[in-house]
Structures are given as C-alpha cells and as structure tokens.
Image (tube, rainbow, N blue to C red; front, side, top):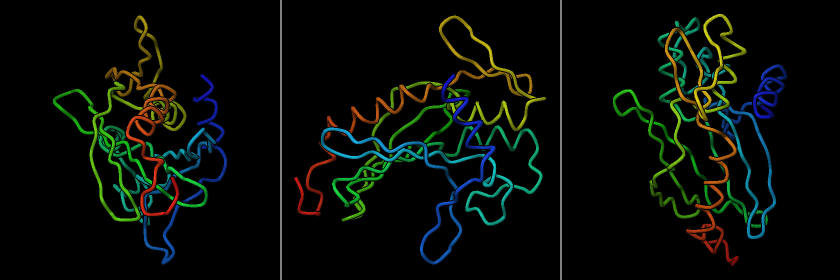
Length: 195
C-alpha cells in the first residue's frame, strides 16, 4: 500500500524525464529511491505510463490517445524498473527489468549492462506477476474507470478492462535485485579501479 501511495504522489507531481546530454528522446522515468548498502549504492527508477505512451518525444511513444488495448500491451511489454549500481561516484552496472509475454503469462528477466566495457548479460527474474506493482498503481489512478484492485488468496490482483492480472510486488523485486547484485558481486571492480 505504501508503494501505491508513493506512485500516486509521484504521478501527481511533475514527472522528471531522464534525457541524455544531447536531448535525444528517451524512456521517461521517475526516481524512486537511493539506498546506501554495505558494498554499493542502489538507485531505483520507475518508467511511467504517463509521459511515455502518449508523448511523441518519448522513445516508446504509442499514440497521443492510446486505447485500452494499447495501454495494457504497453504495461505488459515495456520495462517498468531500472536500477543503477554505484560504487563511490562510479556507475558499476545498470539493471533493467525486462518483461516478455509467454502465452498469457508475463515473464521477467534482468538485463545487466556494464557501462564501462558495454558487456551485458541477461539473467532470470523469479519474482512473478503479470503487471508490476507501480504500473498497477498508475492504472488505478490514470484509468480508474477501467481498473480495480482486489485480492485472490495471497495474490494482489488488478482487474483492468474486464481481465484480471496478478501484481508483481515491488519490494520483493527490489530485494531480488539486491540479492542478485550481492550474489554476482556486481559492486566489485568493473573498470573503475575500486574493489
């Protein structure tokens, strides 16, 4: 519930766009948190539906007036989260949570990029859910006539346009990302000279 409130507050405030230094179009996002952990700093970001799906300046623009089918396709096929791993002032790794549809199920993986040498690897994500928690929260605010949240046993669900989708919990995902970073020791020297 705290995440839903955070998402509502973020969406009601100005959306901060992340752009490159040449002002090229990009996937607009909002910063969620900066966590200082034992071996690294983790910056967490959320790619919004608003200011992306309907923004011609966004790299993931769909339509100025997207219909419900386009909205749910965007929600289920575009990344929701991006994490940046820092050691001191150096970016050590960037992790994007990539969704893909396998039949009716959404499956996630982590695309891990080392910006210092451009090496990347894709690793599996075990945290399940058809729609990410912050995307569900945004649907509940932006498309309130089409969406409703409910629980089915231990699962949080969202009913959107008469279809029920399970919700992937954000805190469980973030915990999994931190475990991935520690397990693979992404915080170690990646060309920065730090260990």
